[in-house]
Length: 170
Image (cartoon, rainbow, N blue to C red; front, side, top):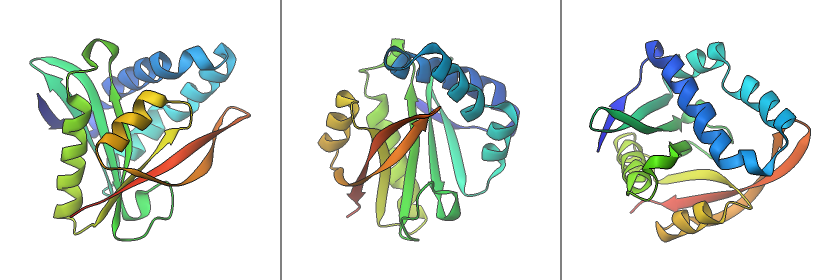
């Protein structure tokens, strides 16, 4: 496995993988109309290009050989989606394509996030996870994350709840 930094030129590949992985994970729980509206907004090409150009966000393709298995997105400082303080790094996305799940890629992404956090003098990493995503909640708990709160997450006009989970770095 290799993590390869993503540049703005890679936005179309990033968009394709984002739509694929998000649909695989959350499509069964949401109507096609809500999914389409969300995907068109969240992974809009111009939005992704702005995110890729933000110096406080970092994206990495997860590669196995020549194949892109998924990607990691982390946010520092003002790029974080919640105000969590200057001592925190956000893991906004770990998106792994279905064919590559259960191969330790998520764990490697968390290790990379921890490395980035330490290099930037952060003492905590945090993320949001959908309250009904049991496999993800279990995965993060196994890696030392603890629930510290929650926030509303909207899929179209459907209000859902994300648990905020945090890990203190030693």
